[in-house]
Amino acid sequence: MSIYANTKFQEDTDTLTVTESYCSLIVWNDEVNTFEWVIDTLIEVCGHSTQQAEQCAIIIDSKGKYAVKQGSYEILKPQCDAITERGINATVEVIAN
Image (cartoon, rainbow, N blue to C red):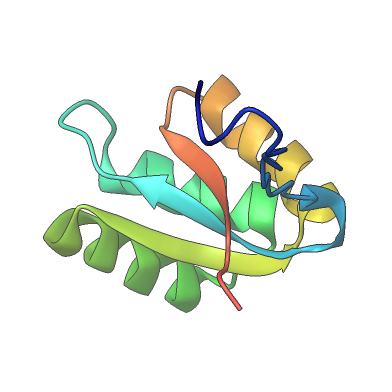
């Protein structure tokens, strides 16, 4: 007879609710897209100034990725989709609290 016969186990699960989280829009470096294309995209899609977009492109190139914008998932997801539709790799990541 098992000593656990009358023992009930409770399974703990965590659920991540993205809609209420603060997120980062990450743009990833690649060997395909030009600086100019990334800069133009950041200006048009994210509303960056020319100088801000240029600085982001430099960081993306040197670090491999960069969080170009932060905000709610609802705001960043359409911008991420617009960036990826232009052939640039981008993701939305939840910022850990």
